[in-house]
Amino acid sequence: MSKRPSVVRTLPILHRTLDALRGRKAKIAIVPTMGALHDGHLTLVRNARRRGLKVVVSIFVNPTQFAPHEDFGSYPRTLNEDLQKLSAEGVDLVWAPNAHVMYPEGFVTRIALEGPAVAGLEDTYRPHFFGGVATVVGKLFAQTRADFAMFGEKDYQQLKVVTRMAKDLDLRTKVIGVPTVREKDGLAMSSRNVYLSAEERRTAPVLHRTMKSVSAKLRAGESLEAALAEGRETIAAAGFAIDYLEARHAETLAKIGSIKDGPVRLLVAAKLGRTRLIDNMKA
Ligand code: PAF
Image (tube, rainbow, N blue to C red):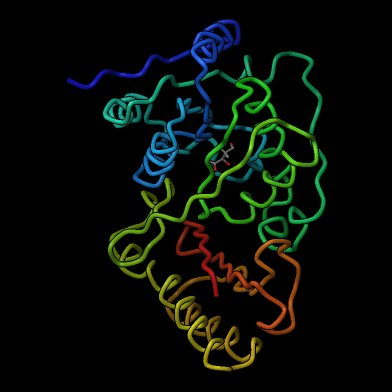
């Protein structure tokens, strides 16, 4: 029978438990999450386990990365189901601090970011987001002193931001990006997919299909501008309110003029009803 991972809620116990694991010469990976776990998260855990690492999953719905009008209050919180899902995965511990442990009274520090965090993608629509993410991820890295951290490519700009942040701050944690896990119809797995109505769920894979078609057109020699304009039209015609469909340099997220300036990453964000979906793929 699989065993529920132990849930740690205070820093002294976290440090004691991790010291014991390290004492046995184990290397540690953290999988940072906000819970509402799906196969995408479990893939991150499995990837870490395949590398022979001990695995800490953090579950913390981070208030500082949500704007007041966003879904912090309604974000799915499913700790029991999450622990059940992790039981079969051989996770070593779950780090689930509350907001007072993460941000004790008097907490005022926030990491200020440039580079991929100000690329004019998610940051344009969620200006508060990466400051909150980088600060909590920086804290998670410091709290666990993990050797590795597993991040999904689904949040591609986030992956680039935390990779840069860990390097720039000389943190010992090395960030590993793991390919996006998709439903059979191509929709990228996301905790927010539960917000989609049945009809929206049927429409949602248009994002991935459109990126595939833009990518094929670019490889066939169509100009960046034309392929992206056609892609935006397709997405809008399916009923999305589009925030962006862009082709960027895959590492820096800088703007590019043609696919020769690559490697190229396509990135999309669009709202379907009240659900905002993001996705990306290699062009
Ligand atoms: O990707 C997420 O779930 C969150 O942004 C993260 C990395 C756990 C930070 O709160």
